[in-house]
Amino acid sequence: MATEQELSDFLKSVEKRAFKRSVYHVRDEEAALDIVQDSMMKLAEHYGDKPAAELPMLFQRILVNCTLDWFRRNKSRNALFSNLSDFESPGDDGDFDLLENHESIEDLQRTESAEDATRRAQIFREIESEVQQLPGRQREAFLMRYWEELDVSETAASMGCSEGSVKTHCSRAVLALSKALRAKGITL
Image 1 (cartoon, helix red, strand yellow):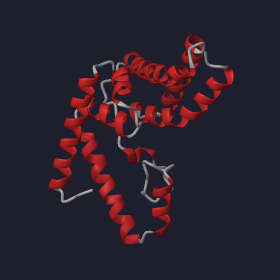
Image 2 (image 1 turned 90 degrees about the vertical axis):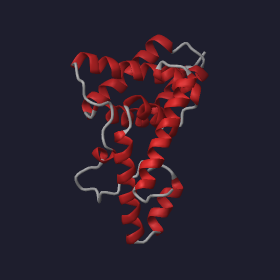
Image 3 (image 1 turned 90 degrees about the horizontal axis):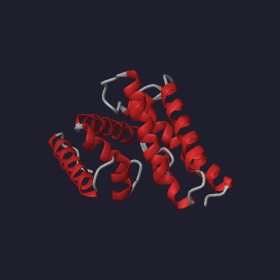
């Protein structure tokens, strides 16, 4: 059983990523904040007595369900994902870094030339564009596996599908992305 401190620590550890993910889904910061808060409240109210090891999967599933509920309430048929560039504030230099907390990327940014930074930003925009072209389920599986860093079983549980489906969606997404990027002359 998770202690109150373990539950609190878990919620603190996921709040920023859950918010970014929700903003990425609903394209509205206020709605995303509501979704994350609702998800956290539901976890605490209904599953606070579960073991700490089960909290990540429970929270992911609750977050997915709250997001779907938001779409149902608003009867929105918009795509679930938006451009990563939507996270940039008006004063940004246009170099949004998806892995902003990753130290090696931060170190690279401090030491790279302007030409390298520009090229990296252009490549990132191309990748972002190609991710947007993926079918919804492929995009969702790809982002959960490679952005959220969930394993196959966690992704399957969050998406409400089998592990085989997750593997298929991810494989197809990676294949489509690599083919599209190679066609543009981008190799990673």
